[in-house]
Amino acid sequence: MPLAIQIDAELKEASSGKLALGVLQAAVTVSPYDQALWREIDECVSQLASTALEGIAAMTPVQALRETYKALGTDPSRYRGSNEALLRRIAQGKGLYKINTVVDINNLISLESRRSVASYDRTKVGEQIVFRCGSEGESYEGIGKGAINVNGLPVFADEQGAFGSSTSDSQRAMITPQTTQLLMVIIAFDGMQGLREQLARATRLLEKYAAARGVRSEVTTST
Image (cartoon, rainbow, N blue to C red; front, side, top):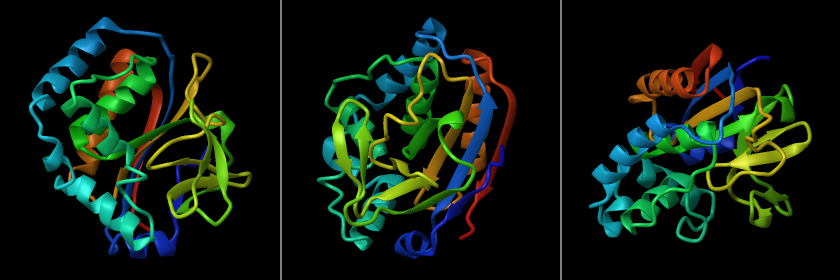
């Protein structure tokens, strides 16, 4: 299946031209829990535990996402990016949920990079994927959140419509124990710096803890 994800021109402009996507695809084996992986996660969490809440919004990747949301007419304090939400959980001492190895790796990459990271079951989405602004009246069934209004949010969409965003994802494409094909996207509203290294880190983690095979990755900045 092709890796390319098109970036919509409106969304690119809203990010002041900086938006880039690190896209990874692989066959994976999803497990409920891996103790060694959680040792890595706990180490990362302990390093971030002293982060002040008021300092999170000033982190470059978080700030870039917030500025893009504002440019789209969306309040980033009401619809926080998933990166900011995760960082705030850690700063508040709430820790992370244990979901499964792929989602846990997704969250670790997000914490390390300070960027929103999205993971989808590749078999549940179409061939033509675009990262665009959600339109008026557009919504999807969120993971544990009911219907989510995605108007004004950056969303991933295929032929059936939106299935995920940099804030919250849909049930349609969520990672489950039955997932065998992964599509992971590191969303860089702040530009390409460090993105290839973060993809390489994600590859290593997926190979080690999710038996990833046939990993392919690329960075796209094109509209």
